[in-house]
Image 1 (tube, one colour):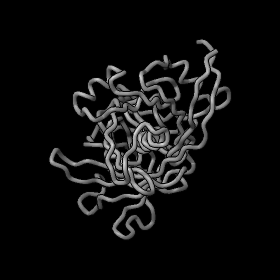
Image 2 (cartoon, one colour):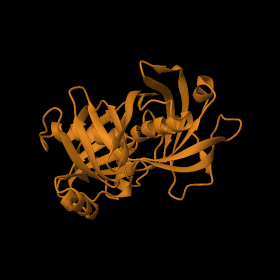
Image 3 (tube, rainbow, N blue to C red):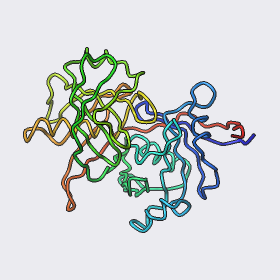
Length: 293
């Protein structure tokens, strides 16, 4: 048996097991990830985030070529043991963890560059939370989305924000609440690498003080239904703005089962970026005995 030290954290209920492994010494296998994320026999989480120096991983070495100051890499794994490109809630929790562990020491309103499999992501350290620049987004294909609880499949819009999403708007809150997301939704055509499925309804009224308000539930690829998905919130706001046209604002408030997230679209020299803001909390730390796999 091996003993691992860990910390449990979450961002609006999207929860993670965090490990400190600066030199990449832990053999982080799919079996180990599944064990740690198991809510009955392990710690329980939507994913595992390993704090590792970029130079210790091949993906991180590529990151350092882009941004030499991105010392730390977010090695993120889904609960089913698959690796993921990005996690909007996870990167905020990861930033909070790095600060709490004394691995970085940014001041308030400093921007911290972090490596991910989707590239470098800049996180702004604020007084009441964290804002991550998710970078440029990309419009994907239209697909039909079928889910348990829906009488017919609904049209969905593909949105890429470092990882793939398909967003479908539903008729009303009753339809959203009636979804059974214990059953994995399906897409037609099926995305080659899979995708997160977001189901969204507008608030009434949609606009309040210049901010658009929507409500979302999500089935995350490699996890299942989660209480929140940061990149999914961004994708949902982007899809809704696309459908609404030029009269739609660039500031959005997205209600998820675990809380509320803020999304903003803004222009840069390389094209439009989208940012995500929200809280990050560390719940407890401990040790766990890990069996040999």
